[in-house]
Image (cartoon, rainbow, N blue to C red; front, side, top):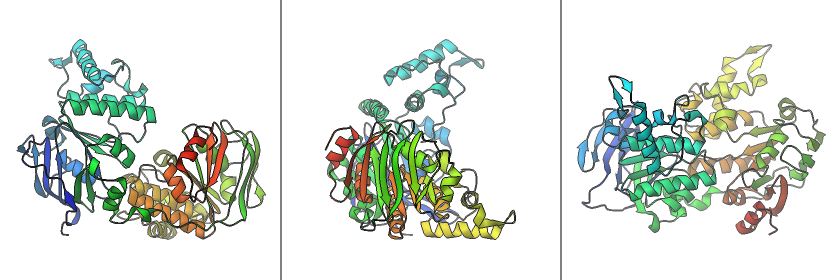
Length: 510
């Protein structure tokens, strides 16, 4: 495979760089994961590394941190050629990566987590606890964090655990800090706190590589952006000189306007009728969703939007009201099984903990939700299991080595496709989607959008919750907004005003 033509490269010149990777190539089983990739990080900058799932970002990071050895290319740290034979070598050179799944040990203290490893103060194998806590506190103070150093790390909030991980990197004298999806589990307030810390580190001269699928964050936080596609570096630009649309088109190799397929599949035939539905947070909600319609549901966190889907799916019992699917009223004391029998399925927000079994294979995950299709007389057919999995993998374009590959080894976007595949194998009348594109790249988002519109065109009713208003507008036929458990506004998605929708989110009239 030859490297693609560079669209535009921001020349760094001869200035000293915190980290430079040039001509990095890496193959796995003869398949190219990286082809002459490169990345240049300046001291005191926040540098976004972007690309679809499978673009090569993770492999490049693992090469930069010594997890993988490159087949070709070179790495320089502070202008000096280096070879990292392992993670410890990279850390000693000041290159530290923090991954989305933080390696925080929950059963030991904050101080111990921060000072783990070679930097732990000790004498003759005995920890000097006063010094350990003092050093840990010093690194937390540098981040302006008031986290008790004696507290067990498992009792911290997600953002506090992230801060402890950053403090540990500082204890290792990190000069280049690589952050992989650091805001995936954080609230808006926690994200602002993290950004404040990252800006302070930038002011101290730390080079930060920031990997995120949230492009709005990139444009708020970062100085430069490097975009990868198909294992190669395509472009490096100043954030001030590029738009979100340009980033998307460079990542996927197509126009951003192609992300959302056309509408117009909704009919006037009611399929789901909800009347005065009340649960724990949801209060007196009524609406109708039609065959072929994509009904978007928005609202701020805690507005009741996700609970609404759980009530519909039978995951949570409701106090009063009625739910009718295809003319059949569901029982208040119903169950997930009864809802599934009625032809309504839920793809939950937390795919890793609720949607799939990460240790099981693709085919086993799909089979577990469709036992009636893969077994007879109490015996499961291996042939049927494999055939059903291959059908789902083909229809949803799941990128994997094969149906027996463990789901935990797939990218986030492909994990989400496995959840969709196992539910779509049931041929549902109604598809409930809770944040269907959270944490996945723009290319996979576009695939999921096309799939949703294809299902709607076939007559499926889709009810989709999303926290992203542009996604609701682009994907839906009609939008409901929730505020404090109630529907605060409704409008057609075609020509919808984002500002009006946001006012509904805050309980104001448009």
